[in-house]
Image (tube, rainbow, N blue to C red; front, side, top):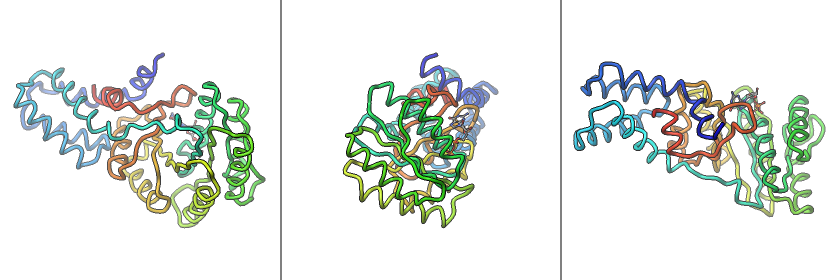
Length: 296
Ligand code: GDP
């Protein structure tokens, strides 16, 4: 299955929801534009983007005489793609570099690190994983499994050790070995908390200071958390000064727009999107493909 196919499969529910708007009455009237704007908001696109996009599309439809559902859906996908294009970015090509993954428990950090390690290995890049989630024993084990699966070594310490010391260790090793890509998994909590932020602030500070290679701090966020995800993202960003986003679990949600809403609100690029649990289900963010999968 191609990349676009699995993205389309993942976002099928979102597309179905838009299909309803476009085929409901067939008339391009006041109700239609209201339904469209509502649907964009319900898809977690954010009120600001939803309104702007609807207004622009409405003008374009009047100007160019667009009437059919097909024409309007095409125009919507193109308009959204223009919006999403600001979020396109692929930092994993830019090596050597170190990427720190932060986010709450269950967001998909460990899975994402594992998938990226597998991809790096397959592309012939040298890679090291840092297991800085020393809070939960299970987290280290889970990371070891991904390390074995992808053939990438995991540098970690025992449960309860200072996470920042793991960052030191893995950067030391990477410097010695000339490693191209260092992926560091960090601990989450069930929710954002002052304790988590303090811990992560230290991890980020130490890593940025110690590293002789560029460091990026990436928030991994679960798309199904909806608007709450936006609040989380704001908290992480104000504490850690994020560089980018990875949005997971876009499969099976009708609300894929949250990816774009967060990116828009915090002015952050989307490094990858997760559309399933398999290794191929982590994709680069392509604005046009994403727009088509979402509404087209
Ligand atoms: P962490 O606590 O942030 O490290 O989260 P995990 O990596 O342990 O992931 C939590 C769960 O989400 C696991 O069961 C993963 O398989 C699942 N998961 C991660 N990414 C995706 C995705 O893109 N789609 C789906 N459906 N599940 C995912």
